[in-house]
Length: 357
Image 1 (cartoon, helix red, strand yellow):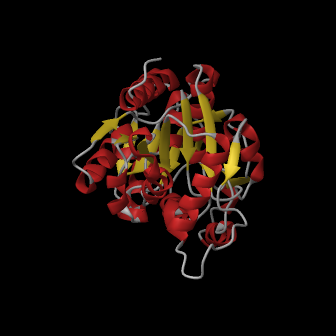
Image 2 (image 1 turned 45 degrees about the vertical axis):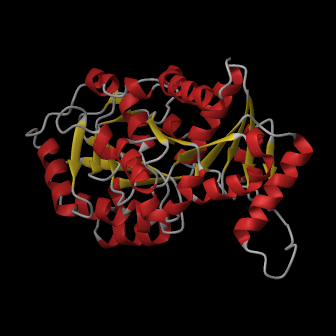
């Protein structure tokens, strides 16, 4: 089967990129042909080299007429590529709701031969907007149960299939548990508007006992966060690693993983941590609230509440809260294995396409 994954523009680093990479490669391993289309090259272009076929449907394009709107420009440019390269059996309108509208405009002239369009959102419409475009997809794949409900709020006429988000467990090694001093981990972009590193740093401030924090990642707010850590007098206990394409290779031992985001479409990094046997402490937001069970594989705390985060961390230091076992953590995320999620995805794609593999 020929499958197009169509998105806006990926940064080239992060959870979205990891998911698209392992999904595309697994579908290819199963005999499908996968093409990636995005508006322009990724900011970090190394990611683009992961794919056999990747095209940029609006890179350097010019308006066909003065009043041309971006939506139509993107759709017509994608159609031009399809006319040259051939049309797929299925289009995965990925990332945001707008892509469903772009893809529909690109193929609406084909009548009964129109490829099926399936949305595969990685951001909730309530955050990125454009939910009204979801009705232009023939079906939807939801990476979380709350995202499924949100899609249904905009389109209750088409099937919405919950499939989860994949993690490639066979390549994952268990991380040794560090007990004294406690070692906390954060992996991700340092963008405070979403990731709220200020909540994490304020939560660590004032802890009584021995601890350290390893931060692996980079972003526009790194200087701000480093300054805040110095102001809170905790910077000596923090190791700023910077960006690494393989961040888990830098983690040789850990006590717990901390996530402080206000918004997460899923929280893939939590699954990656749990798969390595690391308990997680996360804000109670969409995505993480489906992954984390209090006392089972970690703890949840309210968004923006650094005091509650501090209480949980202090309780762990004082051994009032006992860290879940590595085995319990690993067991809790088996439903997100690459094979399980891609099986779910593949079944729905085949069903919607009307083709038999």
